[in-house]
Length: 411
Image 1 (tube, helix red, strand yellow):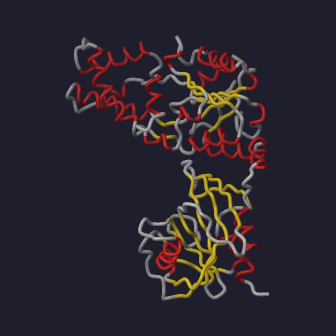
Image 2 (cartoon, helix red, strand yellow):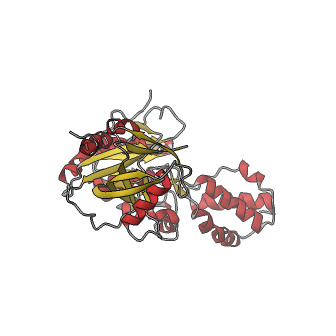
Image 3 (cartoon, rainbow, N blue to C red):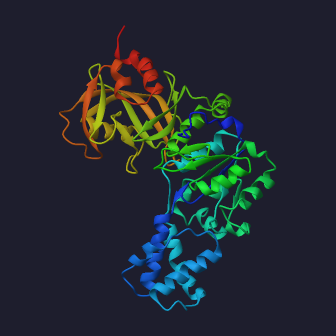
């Protein structure tokens, strides 16, 4: 049986309990590097291959003590005081933790659940409280994408229970805190044993595993790509209800895969006599008209797109940025231009791009030779009726093709 997401429904849940290590962040490889740094510096040993024989699954302070006692026995006499060992371990711990990153699109998914639903979010982790405090602080570079303390309503750690996961105590504690029906709770973890403990309490379970095709008996769902989770979320009625209730409704709301990852994009059309809105723009992109055709720039390793790009610090204004980009990517001059719309994009790393779109009449200066400021390989000219097949923006591309015809096809 394949426990896929086809029948997964966000509507039934009031609480979402998520694991940390191995589910939201990929930490195991970095913590193994911590052990190597410790051995190399504490015991002055360059060969750390013996560490590969040890299983790392830190689930309690007692386990941690036994683990480092094994290391001390491997490289010394096994009698080194633990406080002395931990002083060195802690010296390198934050250095290693700073390199830990979110699993691809995990932070985007959690930000969307927080923003677009009323579901309560909780972390259940065998990490220590001080570790989670670090990951919620500015000391951790990835916190700019999602600070656990800001996104999650509660964080239950190893320090809050007597028995760590896979014991059910942590889940029982969270259920008691929220006083919620277990049938209205979803638990996500990368360990089947933990999920079985949650299942025994009556909660729905989802296993995160990239390599499996089946989660196994007793587990409800298998998740092997956070983008699949995001897709189910945006198809759900809570998400759609939020979109309907928005005050700043976009002309068209869309989401599509760009460079292999899902991203949300709201496009806002500007009227015929509009001026450039007072937004701090990240980039400017051009619906160019070169002898009745629209230029599309092509990349060697990326999908084709519109000419334009991010605004450089050297650009004094939008006009200067636009003319520079068109010169670099098309070897053309801008005769005149006007704003026709803008797009607000939530990128896979959960950062937001504000992109201005303009229509511009262009004049060719010469043949395109090289994009001196970017990665454009070449450009091609197309009729406006080809726009939706060349630019992979789903419904937005189709809508733009229709709305822009008036600039390219004379009645």
